[in-house]
Amino acid sequence: MEGNLATIPLQDVLEMIHSNRRSGVLRLEAGELPLVLRFSRGEVVGGGIFDWEGLEAIGAFPFNPSSGSFSFVTGRQEGVPLLPLPGLVAEWARQSDEWDRFREALDSPSRVLEAAEGADKYQVFAGGKSIRTAAKAWQVPLVTAAERAWKGVYAGQLRPVRKYAWFGLRIRHPLSRRTFAEAMDPNLIAIRLDGSRNLGEIIQLGFPLQSIRRFLVEELLRGELRPSGRGWLLRDLLWEIASEEG
Image 1 (cartoon, one colour):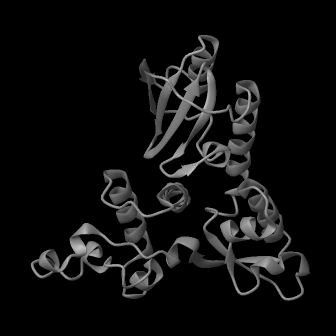
Image 2 (tube, rainbow, N blue to C red):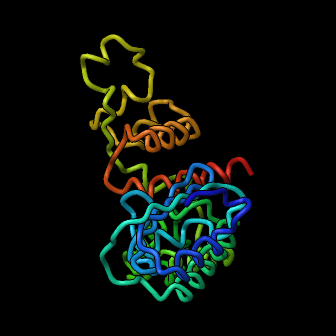
């Protein structure tokens, strides 16, 4: 089974699989963002964006995409339902709406925020921390941390800094190998991704932030880059690109 999400809404696709108690893998694409859902007898037992799995990752995929595609391949899947499908659908829709709202002030959960002096409630952001880091420190779901951060920004207690959590990643690109590098333009981003510098340091070399984002998205989707955390990285990069494009 396959089709276009512009003609068959995502919720209808989920309901068809659920009502027929099908088992298999549903692949969704909305723009450049992929999502995989694994079904066992009509219930979602797993899924996510690349290696970012679970309800948190599923909730970061738009629930009502205006365009995109889906395909479902039947096959046995093992696991315990994340939630009964009606509950999962409700939670997914809620998180999707919440992300749309929070991103009016915060382009992605990778955005680094800094607490204002005296903002004791937000000391987790002292010195500059990302929303993802705050979620771990608070031990709350990512969308909950985003809500707290969103309120802090509007209250003037948090200030966005032009840094992102992914600046700290060290990624090696296949083309960074010496045999390739010697014959290629040393200014190419791929050559610089040899694992000796993190992405923030690569940007400091003079590469525009927008170029780094687009390059990473393209290489992640091609499978040339497979760092740990590539699922959340792709999700955040696409959110940031969308915010820049307005």
